[in-house]
Length: 218
Image (tube, rainbow, N blue to C red; front, side, top):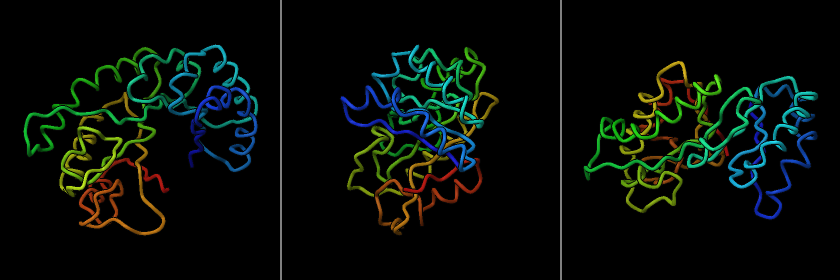
């Protein structure tokens, strides 16, 4: 099980990581959590490297599992305290650029080529595995362009399937750990007529069965 501390809206987000980590560490330890993320998408706060190092030290004194920090896709390479955690987390909503109006898995694999080398360099620099702490795609015919949404009205479950297949291909290698997938709802939904993020009842779910994805349930 993974426990993540999500960013709140400013100005709280600038304070939260440095005022409450010990309580989260105690909860994680008490419930045998195997990976504790001390923050995610803290784009502004992550510049306070010394403060995060102090947080990590404090958390390690109370929590004995693995620790990650999950950076947003566009600022992950700017984090300079990844040496202090066990896992390099990236929320991997990288926009993909493809020329075809009906792109294939191969097109999406090619479009990932600008994003994978910097992630591999992070692994090489810090000697820690990179994980996709959050990744997902809508089921629409433009999902690759704006992976974080909003979802379009033109439902295309095949595009979602091919995007997942591409991710499976481009993350093969010792540099990569695992991907946590957004999202699988607890109130049903999904199916061939649904354009949202869930892969429930869609071809993408079959892709997930063949690889080391974990489903994040929201």
